[in-house]
Image (cartoon, rainbow, N blue to C red; front, side):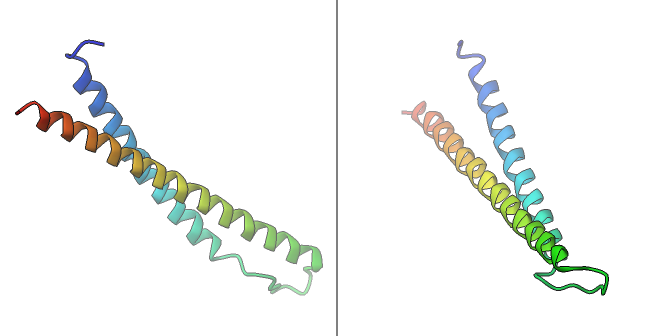
Amino acid sequence: MSRRHRPLYRTASICISLIGALTNAAIAVQVFSACQVVKWGEVESEWASDSWIQVADGIKIMCILLSLYFVSSALVCAIGLVGILRVRFVLFFSGFD
């Protein structure tokens, strides 16, 4: 890889990491807020049976797992972004010595 293409690759990796962190964080917030709508074990209809309680609890657990997945994905992207920026600034400032 030539030196001419390195800044382009670094800029692209910064943008991808930033977009990934922001997108995953936004999806995590949306999933978590949607998870708040489902009630734990509460049935408001007289037509609903015990199986509905199990379905609602399963949906709630799935929402929690999805929000944890997207939060961890956002954290991984943020850690990657910090690493990219650290390497970029170390290389940038080492050129002035």
